[in-house]
Length: 314
Image 1 (cartoon, rainbow, N blue to C red):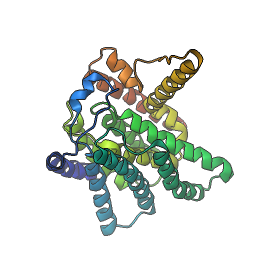
Image 2: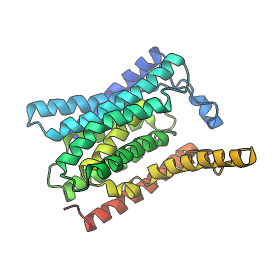
Image 3: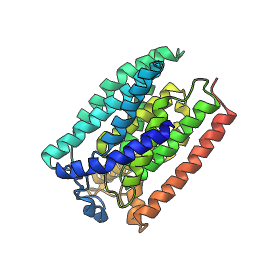
């Protein structure tokens, strides 16, 4: 019922929000160094993620108001909204500068670290972590930053991140039913329904993009889920596509800098990074590529569920 409620509300709100974005001329700025096929997306309404942030947030608060308040709702909203703020600031700067570049990397990273500190301390206390804080803190911080920025890198094709997010959320909904004795977090169900409705408008050819406000929101949510449920060790499998996207970008940049230093001319391993652009430039149509990524994510989700079923958390 919660999934259906947020789905219907988001489905009804999104067309009106798209028209508002068009009226305010809040459109996508496409980087010139990106794939040439993406230049046609210039001006497509962006920051659509605001809808799938606000709908689950308001509905979950209303649910908590009329039912018993769950303490974990505060922290899930904290991670979602704080990281959404970072994405919003990035999108706002792009709009004000009329450029595809928003916050500087150091500004982005600084805000992520600042917002992560209270949550990491909460997890350390709430889960009664036995490892020393000086070991757990850098590990948890690295995980949050890795997940958030990997998610942001993955948001590069119509519907790609939306579909992958749905499958990862399905894992956590199933995990709540299988092994964790608490009821499924209502916010998780509401967010699932809202993202599903957003995908209706975000699939190729996208009528709206989620913007960094949306991708950072998803990154904050997935980081919360991994650490709060103790499933951080499943991230390399469940988030295999996210890992591949991030690693391809790291490898590409590192190799380019290394070869430029050694030979004076930078060389590339991939046609373009992240890796979805490599396949896109190899001639695979964008919709086909997105569906194939979804299929891979489905396989990774099933494998993660089987692993969880075999080695459930105690």
